[in-house]
Image (cartoon, rainbow, N blue to C red; front, side):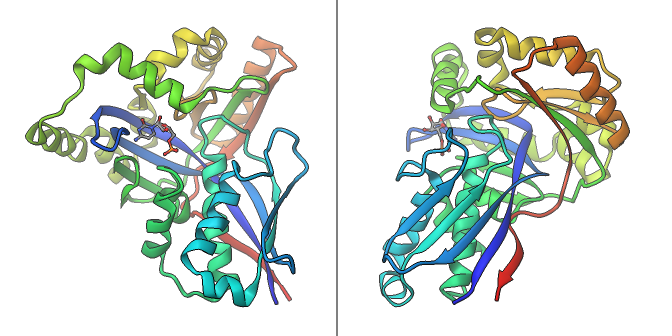
Length: 317
Ligand code: C5P
């Protein structure tokens, strides 16, 4: 039986607005999500143990049932038990390049790659919308990771509308290696501090959604105007994460001193990105921030916007 190697890109949030509470306990969101070429690589190979094993040489990555990639595999087993009985389990090897607990959907994109990989390995023929339905059971960002590119995400973050490609922009990303922010903590803290501003009436929710649709970020994307996109970056979670993590604020301020188009924290943080016109400008910003902060714990990457989600890198044989 064949084994597959897949590329699983990270995402950044160009826009993240928290609108209100949802009946399912999550937040009603409006986000613009963007894939970037900082990516994990996954190998999915059939095994003979009638179960799944996760392998990863990064000790920060759990290889048990708490790993989203494992949960994705178990979901496929539960959903397609007779196919699982026929084909057996799989060994899933993660080559982690995306930093962990960084607000870059690293765990979500690995889970998305497992769904795509098992769909191929088990010859299920599931369509992208069918895979995205399964993906939404694993986490809010997982459906986006399947298709990738540039998309408007509403509801819990899983209702997706593809947007025109913005693939000419470059970025520099930074994260303190030992700093992790819990996503539930960030949302709960936001609720405690800003819950009184939440919208709950159905008609008000609809109005807010329409406002996002006709808003300036979406028109900047439609025009492919990188400068405008960078000026309009927005993330409500910065309001709770930056005061609690002064290092992240310092990082953002260091990027503001560079020749970049705009800077923002991604998702629930603590990674910070800055958008640049060219790879050269992104590299210059990386060097300037590295020198300004001079902390051996600070990792920096130069990356590029891309218009793809999970990609097949190779199949053996
Ligand atoms: O969906 P996912 O498991 O990735 O979400 C992680 C956590 O982020 C949730 O448990 C919840 O605390 C918070 N969240 C939220 N509203 C969303 C998405 C995530 O409150 N729309």
